[in-house]
Image (cartoon, rainbow, N blue to C red; front, side):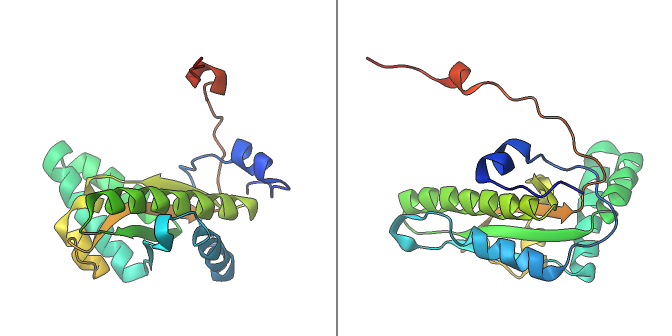
Amino acid sequence: MAEPTSTLRDGLRQRRTIHDFRPDVPAWPLVLAALESACLAPNHYFTQPWRFYRLGQQTRQSVIELNARLVAASKGAGAAEKKRQRWASVPGWLVVTSKISPNPLTSKEDYAATCCAVQNLMLDLWASGIGCKWTTGAVTRHAEFYRLLGAKRHQEEVVALLWYGYPARIPKALRSAAQSKLTQLP
């Protein structure tokens, strides 16, 4: 389990993408509290563009099978079976989407705000010892994925498929120093 964090800065520095989870599913009230934190993300004109989908066992299995078909088509049956087994071991699943606006600039701002919401969600979960993996693979762009969610592609865009659970291991982070990304202007 990830260690609970005491400050925001600790959480930002300690949070990691988790690839391997223990099998126990975190209590839903902890996840719901993190969703409340997600809704505190900044958003231009208070559009609140994010939508959350909690995937139950049946929907998860359908997504796993869809992904296995996609992987089999591109990498073969062996790779598909490895993905199927790996994905089936993930304890918690959420999908986060962003509303699509007829105004391209508003859609861009809403997508960015939804990304902020996902970060809030992941940091809140981390503070409770729950890790996440944010994925956006080909399966999340497939028409059948939208159908499984009951979402309309012309009304909302998938921003994240989030896997969550208690970490089986926490990887080390390799980050560049902020100074290496900074341009000082006169």
